[in-house]
Image (cartoon, rainbow, N blue to C red; front, side, top):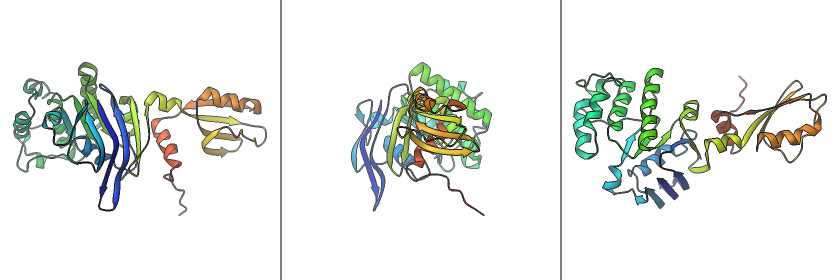
Length: 297
């Protein structure tokens, strides 16, 4: 549904995107993660047709996006900084969206009043950031778009409203096969909703996997030995920490394979545990020089 091929973009001498390739299938929830400045927002602006790429192709359902009005009408976007007209309230923005999105569902807008208890007559500029995000969700969901692009969508929302917004979005994914691409630093939340993950770093896509494949490709091993072990060189170790006799390894590969390599060393105990998405993110980027530094004060 969403496909970018060899996408590149420079601003002056700075290369913001470097031959990025992503693919989000129809009905998928694709999580785009990466450190600050990785190029996530720049990529989303290309996918929504705001930016024109220097090189490469961007297609939604096989159609190019830039300056393609028919395709843009099928895309709803919630940026990190929500845009609204200076004096507009929710009703004014609703009329605006209904005028440019032919599938805007006014009946659904009325039904969602209960989900988003906002004062429709209050100027959006006088609302808190969280209330502005609620209004953005309310309006975007009513567009009945085939593709929804989200850049830090729930930043500023309280826990109850975060769950409310995700529940509505996931219902659309299940019922309408809406394709969602979401960029967020809240990896715990992405782990609950995404089925595909792309990791972006310094404008390059380091990897793209289904979440299941990503979590099965890295494992945490905890073990203890009577004496210092000589670990098999075949282990692809991303990280090691020692606490007394207990050795913790983050290893690329499957748990069964890793255990089979360690077992001949006769450990006192040996356990394999899955990693969270946050742990995978930290250890994958650690190999690219982006890791937490231990600073002595």
